[in-house]
Length: 318
Image (cartoon, rainbow, N blue to C red; front, side, top):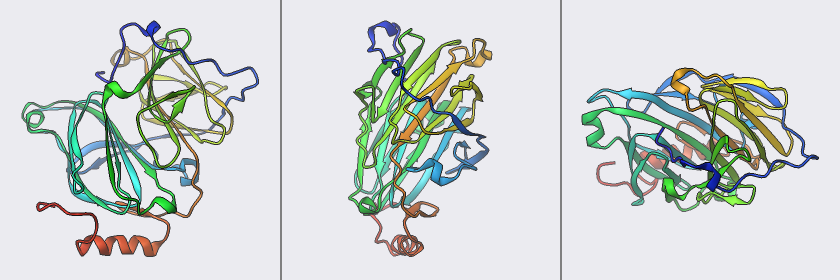
């Protein structure tokens, strides 16, 4: 996969093993993401489907986009649409996506880059494959994560962050069997480039077949492990976890992920996981379509503002 890699992991800082007094986080639940269609019809896996929002807090939703190998003329995106009350994080592993929004933010994200958009008080945006990709087709694979905002930041001024693949903090496991990319937050004293309203950590790790990854993890954060490719185990009891599955972990200050020694040929590189954690907001959630607020009245107000043209600063073609 084109997401940033390093030919020699020994040159990277090593993640210290959790101390002997660290408590390993057990597996609370394992779920399999159902398939769906998003935007103009591109395939997604609904990673958080069926999981109680209280276990996901501060996260709301995550879609794995693809992996799909488009033919010429097949790549699809989303039309102009609104958001309010949260942040969208779009991480592209394979392929290219163009973004534009009504506050003037935008750019191209590709092969390990991340677009971090704070919708806050309200924004309109569009995500679409560039014309050259539509013409040629090609591989496309990524994630979109929704991060909730606390009540005090629900109406914050919208903001856009363009995080290049080369901006992420790169670490390795002590034995060199795992490459860890820190996109946001702090891991063992190494910070990712994403600047977040809600304290979170977002990591993309690739484990070679047979490798084990032990991560120190903030006790006040929750912990989620989602598999994008390959097969392995998670937690102190080595619970099996496969591509398209999510594990919610319990309390503790360390977590463990291992890659099976033998992988399917298409996952020859090993196990690919996203590890997420954040400080729970613990506020009421009222969620309808593109708006995530605290009360139903606030959601109704968001729809009314959008329909009246008051949400964000619409561009002429929005």
